[in-house]
Image 1 (tube, rainbow, N blue to C red):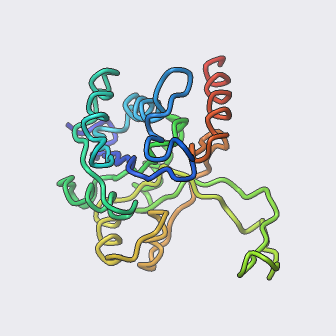
Image 2: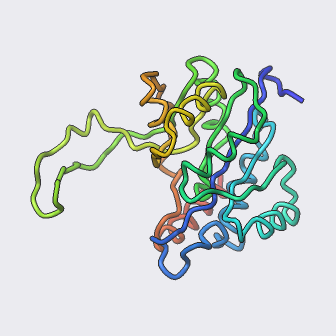
Length: 236
């Protein structure tokens, strides 16, 4: 069933990362808890509540598929239709998901990190709208720090103009035909960012203003930040 916007919107949620930067929690990052709920559940619940998302496909580590399925059932996340095993890399994981969706070329694929739990309805809706209009969109926030370039990590080789720099987030949204072609052309040449693969095809990507609260839980300190963000959002 298609939603009110007239196109099917499928959310692909990569959650198969190794989590090495989380230290002792490596490999279990999606299952770490924020105020008693797993990070992945918080993420999926927000996508599930969106009135533009029709279907959710989760990509998990092979040995975590059953665990994710249990969470989906326990927390009553209705729109998750599939939990599949990911590949060796993020690119491989998303590629597997794209290959099993059965999406039509004009459908919208919304790709969102499983450990980015504070996406809002507004960001989801604006990302989908931008993809409908332009074919490809990336959520991003302006860079506020001064960025140095160093080729060897020892000496500064230059200072980049932060007025031109944006920090990419997710969701990133695409017409299905566009993102599928980008992944096919990429082959084994992966990227940490889906829109980068679209850029390589020569196609433009629209910028959707993001939210600084839309953090990715990556290192141990992020859990404390996430807990504070969740508390602030619940107070509203």
